[in-house]
Length: 200
Image 1 (cartoon, rainbow, N blue to C red):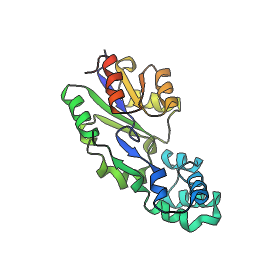
Image 2: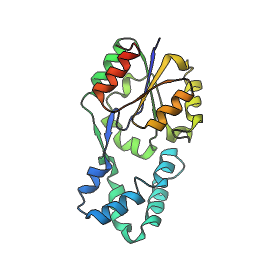
Image 3: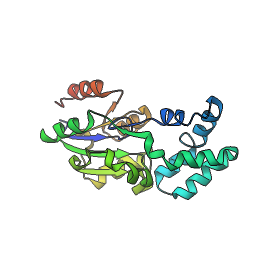
Image 4: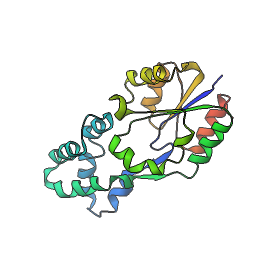
């Protein structure tokens, strides 16, 4: 029986859309692609999530990948909290599950800097029994260690847990840890997949 639900945050409980954000700058297709590759799509972003780089260090890393766009990269990073927007279903969904007695947790790759800039866009946080953001443990999904850390930190029973994430590799890693997994593709499908596991 499932009694614990673990959520990813980006593209599950909030929208993370850096593509639309970058379009606002009207850099043009070629420059936009280069800046995306140097920032949100770069290995440095994962290190930022891991919590081992400061904001200044992450910007320096980004700029090293596309030095010709240094000023543009600085501008993009300065307002990157705008990549995050609330999803209309998130708070009511989480609240409903909480009212039904489920234990609720977050497991998310998220930098401390971005969290501080966007936490007000997460009205579902008070309903959580616990959160594990990658920046606090210096581990990132889909590394097996982060799932074990979650299980141990909150004394979870894996086969009583289900994890929803928009990235298939992260779901598969959770399943390897004994946690039921749902590859999240949207709210309605997510609810349907939970129902198949007996979560109403």
